Image 1 (cartoon, rainbow, N blue to C red):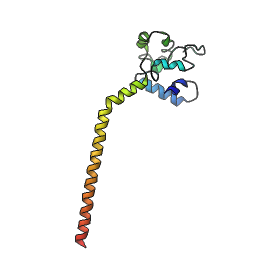
Image 2 (image 1 turned 90 degrees about the vertical axis):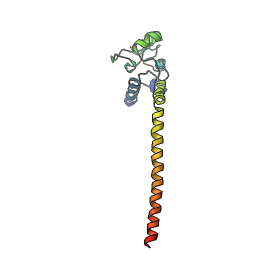
Image 3 (image 1 turned 135 degrees about the vertical axis):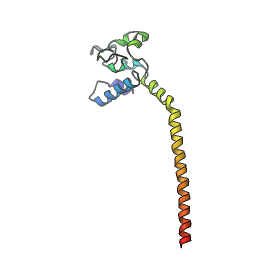
Image 4 (image 1 turned 60 degrees about the vertical axis):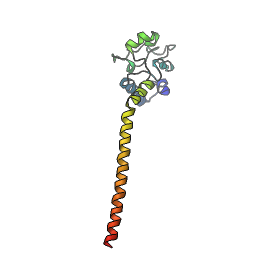
Length: 139
C-alpha cells in the first residue's frame, strides 16, 4: 500500500493508480494508514513545488466532489477541517473493518461447505460398499 501511494502518478503503472483510486472510493478511505500517507508522494508532498496538488490528496479521497482538484492543499488544514472534504481514515483500517464485519458469514459458509463435503464422502463410501457387496452376490 505504501509503495502504491509513494509511486502514485509517478510512473506508467496506470492500472495500479486506478486500483488505488477504486479502493479509496469503494472503501471510503484515503492512503494506507491515514490521509497523511500522501506526504510520501512527490506530487502531494507539502514541500513540493512541482505540482499544484502539493499538500493534497488525489480526488479519489474526496467525499462528495469528483473535481480533479478537490483534494489540493487539504492536508495543510486541521484533521477536523479536512474530514469535511476528504476521507481521513486509512484504507487498511477500512478493509479490515469489512473483513471483521463479514467474518461470521464467511465462517458459516465455510463450515457448511465442509459439512456437505463430509456427507458426500460418507455417502460415496456407502455406495462403494454396496457396489462391492452386489458384485460378490452376482459372482
